[in-house]
Amino acid sequence: MARPQKQRCICSIPQTTGFSPRGCAVSGSVNLTYDEYEVIRLLDHLRMTQEECAEKMHISRPTVTRIYDEARRKMADMLVNGKELTIGGGDVTVCTEMKPECVNEEHCCHKNRELLRGWREMETEVPEQDGAEKMQSGKEVER
Image (cartoon, rainbow, N blue to C red; front, top):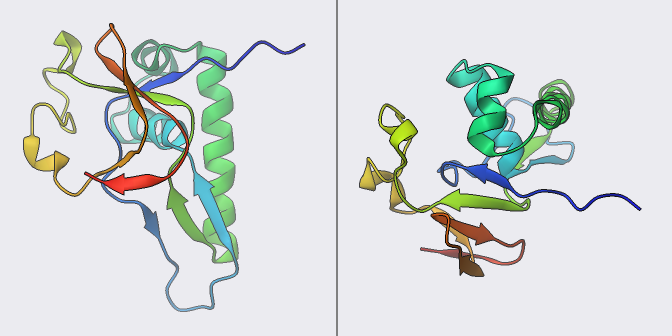
């Protein structure tokens, strides 16, 4: 029997919820989960190492590698085959307060309250003691 998946910790829900191809007919869609988005953001945008990314997301380095490989496969499929990209879903916890290691984090929603406006959150949230909210898959509602 497989071990249950560990929740992944992300800094914030992305403001952008998808992308569409231009110049061709859309031939389907690909969904990038919040944890896949976060790994791409941390590794490629912030240029963290996989070890740093794993520590920030509270997961193992091999898990970061698996998530990164899947996210890259999905993005390649979207680009090569002219598919729409949606961003959402996954079993993640979202940071509810600024942590000391986030002081220099450009995209920290607790540092820049403007980032909170218009963001989408999952409907069911269960506060946890470690400063994170549990995000369950389900309907999304405007905040």
